[in-house]
Structure formats: C-alpha cells, structure tokens
Amino acid sequence: MTILGLTWLRGPCTVYAVMKELAASESTYYRSRAGTAYSVVNRLVKFGLIHQAEDNSISITEPGTATLQKWVGPSIEQADIAHTVDWVRLRFFFLECLAPADRLTLIDRCLEGLAEFEQRCLNLIQVNQELGEYFGALATVNIVMETRARMR
Image (cartoon, rainbow, N blue to C red; front, top):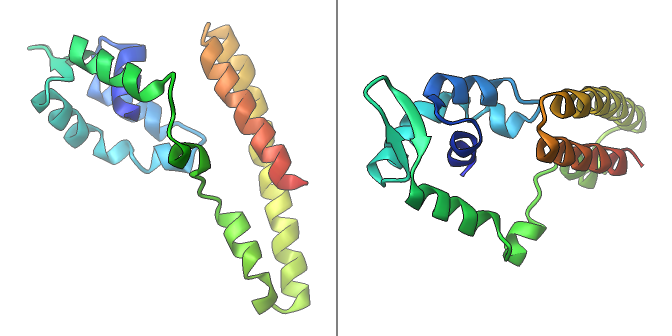
C-alpha cells in the first residue's frame, strides 16, 4: 500500500522517484522496501492499480485510488490498530538475561538513539510544512510523540 500511496501522492512520477523516497525515509520499515519498488509496481500495473506510460512514468488508476481509499479509511481493523513492531521494547522484555552493567549500557544507548531519532523527526516536521505536506507533517508529529513515549 505504501507504493500505491506514494504513487497517488507524487504521481505522475517514476518508479525510481518512489524508490528514492522510500530509501530516504527515517523509517527502517520503508527503507527496507526501497529495493522492491520495481517488482511491486509491476504487480500493481498487472492488477490495474497503477498505469505505466510509454515514458515509464507511473500514475494511480481509478481502481488504484478506490483501493487506497478503502485501505486508508474511514474504518480500520483492530489488528491494524494493535500492530506494532518495537525492537527496543522486545529487547527490554528479555533484559534480565544481561548482566546489570550491560542492561544499563543498553538502556543508555537506546535513550541516546531515540533522542537522535526524535531530533531528525522534529526537523522533518518543518521540511514537510515548507513543502506543503501538512498530512506528512501530522504523521511525523505522531512519530515524535511515539518516540517520546518510548523514552519515558
């Protein structure tokens, strides 16, 4: 859905532009998907959700927009609400397996890393606003709030 959404947001554009946007993301989830952009777009073209022009530019189709709208909302499944992947929290669940000094080192490193990530995201809010990407700024505010909650 991310590639479909980026095509809707940026289109018409190239697959390369979508891939670069994924690769530049602060989110490791999105960065890890950058290498799949071409194969995902090929499948979305095959399903009729994206149109690829002769000049290789891509744009979302009407069925693609309908699919994106259905996924975005207004309804959302509880499984999507409850889904979270937090490798820091998962490690903390098993923290007792470390020696006390190693526990403190891990906690300090996590707090330092979270503080650095928070600052990068705070900078992105302004960048999004300057680009007129107000919903992108809103999503980034959400990331900042989540990061602050993780540091508490």
